[in-house]
Length: 271
Ligand SMILES: NC(=O)c1ccc[n+]([C@@H]2O[C@H](COP(=O)([O-])OP(=O)(O)OC[C@H]3O[C@@H](n4cnc5c(N)ncnc54)[C@H](O)[C@@H]3O)[C@@H](O)[C@H]2O)c1
Image (cartoon, rainbow, N blue to C red; front, side, top):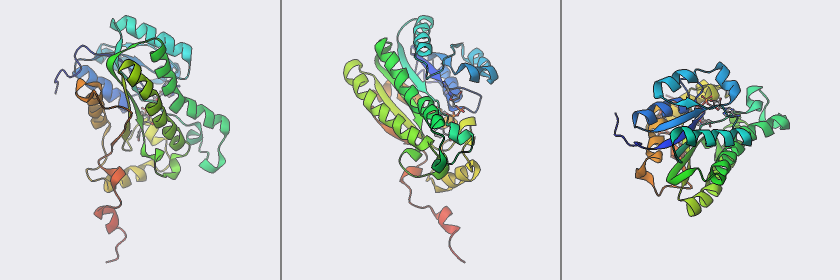
C-alpha cells in the first residue's frame, strides 16, 4: 500500500542482483512510495543479472559501479544527481561477498588475499561510498544512509566465516562516519541487522538451510523476510525517523535477544 512516504525523495540503491535480492525488494517498495532512484551494481554482476527488468518496472536508470572503485563511485554519484535533478535523500548499501566463503576456505585456513578482497567489497566499500558522497556534498540535510548487516558481527556463527569480521567492521564504519555526517550535514547513518534470507549471497553460506530453519524456530516472530526488510528500510528513508542514527537495528523477529525457544528446546527433551 502506498502512503507516498518517499514522495519527492531521490536516492541510489546498490546491490539488486535478482528478484530475491533485498535491494530488489527495496527498490520496488521505494518506487511504490513515490521515491526516485538510480540502480547500481558491479559491472560483472549486471552482465548476468536481471537488473534491466527492475529498472523498467521502477522507471530507474542503471549506472554500473564497482563499489570498491573510487572513480566508479564518483561517476555514479555525479550522474545520479544529474539524472535525478538534485542532491540525494537516501542511499542503500546492500553489498556483501567473501571469496573465502565462495571457495570453501575455512575460517582457520584463510587465503589473506581473499580476506582482503571480501573486506574491501563488504565493508570498506561502505566507507568509500560515504566518503565520496561526503566530499561531493551530495546528500540533502535529513537524508538517510542504510547498510545491511548480520548478527555474526556480535555472536559466533562458525560458517559465516570472515563475513562476521567484515560485518563488525561495516557496523563500526556506520557509527564513525555517522558522527561526521550527522554533526556536519544532518544526515543519518544506520545498519539493519537482518534475519538469514534466501538470496544469492545468503545461500552461499555453508549449511544455510539448517541455519535459516534454526533461526526461524528461535525467533519470537519467526525470520524476517526480504520484503519485510524492505518495509523497515522505507521507514529509515522516510521523515518519520529523523533522529535515528549511529544505530545497528535488529530486524530479525527477536532472534538477537533470545536464549532458547520452546520449539528448539523440545528437540532436546526426552519423552
Ligand atoms: N541473505 C541473508 O541471509 C542476509 C542476512 C543479513 C544481511 N544480509 C546482507 O544483505 C546485503 C544484500 O545481500 P542479499 O542477501 O540481498 O544478496 P544478493 O546476492 O542478492 O546481493 C549482494 C549484492 O552485492 C553485489 N556486489 C558484490 N560485489 C560488489 C561490488 N564490488 N560492487 C558493487 N556491488 C557488489 C552483488 O552483485 C549483489 O547484487 C548484503 O550486505 C548481505 O550481507 C544478507
